[in-house]
Length: 213
Image (cartoon, rainbow, N blue to C red; front, side, top):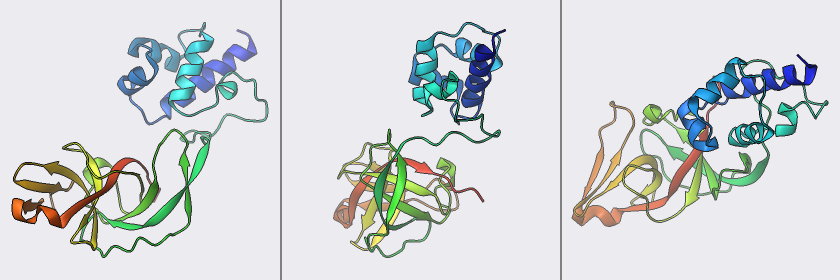
């Protein structure tokens, strides 16, 4: 088997296994069937079309030139690590509570590097463990797209009484707003029709970066 084919198979297998995406998620993002993706990941398919390589590379934010071995300056990364995607500088606007409420102070706190495929307006650092069921942990960085409404069940940054900044799943009904944690240790916060004006949505969470501990 030619050396370039060996490189392609090895690198394609590496990015599929370490993408953090399931085969079902990759299938949706690439339009490539789950069975085909599994064959590429195991190396059982030796003839891999260029458009397949490009689609998978784009889905996991890796250069297709690296996968195809055209960029000799990039080596295979250690297991568990991925080439860094292109990023944009996005302002961080302080801390958001994933637990007990904290007072909101939207002070500029520098910039964070956010993958360019994620469209957001600012980032917030999470504190607490109320959203661990959504894999958002203490110290994680959440990406927020500024908007005043969200669909029921979406995770949003919300402001309560103008001072408490929280990250919760939001459910808006005719007679109430429910802020739902993703940890059974935290009961939902329910605001009746009379108190709904106490809650304002800052924006929708569109992604996050986990911190290794």
